[in-house]
Length: 153
Image (cartoon, rainbow, N blue to C red; front, side, top):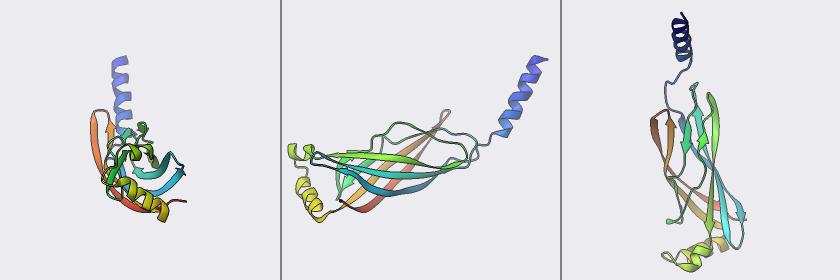
């Protein structure tokens, strides 16, 4: 009798949870300079999602590369993000652009390009790569290709 009751409870719970589709990737916006110093520039961007499912999951952002004026400079670093159920949510993307690396090696005149951009107070920042969604053995990659001109203040 206990086994029948347990199976019945699992069936009811399984049917009440919906997982019709993966969360929707709305896009990246609100790219801004969080901090600018003589050592580094820290950028903050928001990856927007909408999850209509009763189940959450995890988002990983380790595959997103950041380009400044077309030159690769950094990779987004963030921890795994827990996806909330039935909610619109934002995954913060933090990028540290270390200026000390520019002095060690001039990657295709990158230092001159960045110095020019800093003096002009504008630079084109591009995010390219994948955000990976995972849930119980299921995984899906969202392609990210976003560019925006930002102002350094």
